[in-house]
Image (cartoon, rainbow, N blue to C red; front, side, top):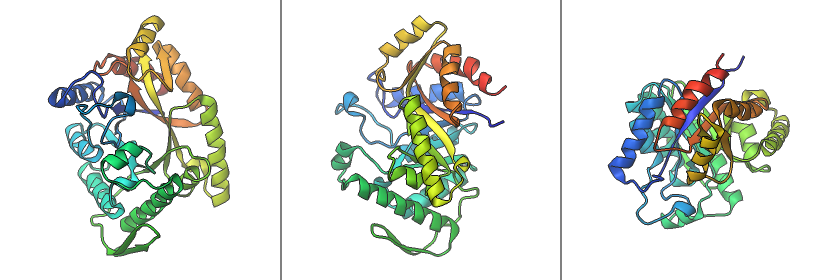
Length: 312
């Protein structure tokens, strides 16, 4: 029987106006409470927060430096990027950084990659923002460069967008970090998932939409000769509000700034029922953001009452 695993979404910006040390203490407090109970923690790759939270004074953590620190501070957790934007780092440098992080964390890193989408962030940090098909083609070349650097010495690759020549990456990661590709574009992204991904993540959306994406992915796997069952299916929800009573959970959800999009709200038993709808489709890994952050009560209740029901 496949074990169902759960990851905690590290907030990439504060939701209560906190700054600097206070925000960092909020994150580390939650990690102290959930390590050994959740399997992993996941960090987004943004420089500025989502538009509805944006202000000139909103702190936002950077993905890989955050993971580097937290992986050392919390050795009972795996750490993953959800997901790194391929545009923000030279592909060869990213391969080296990921290999180095895998070595220092003793195999606890999961490399999540995506094509990028946040146009205001691109422009603010002086990155070109080509059309989606180009960004996805760049992602495909990034993945190929990473694979070459992790398997060949020296490595050479000449793509349309990226190139390396007689490049080395030592030590090579052992084991390789799982490659997670995030996104749900049916024509291009899901084909990349079928070609290259060890894991696939789809952020939010309804059960019905997720089931549809799986069928599209299955078709791409058949087209490229990939075993569909070899790909780990993961799902990330915008917010989980779990409490001892349904009424309290609903109040928690409404008070959260993450009260739009996909939500799981209710008592532990109701949350179990909602998640089992996704495990019934083949999801074996969840990345969850909790509505009551910076309070850790929701995550702790989830660890105590929900996770054991998927491990018996």
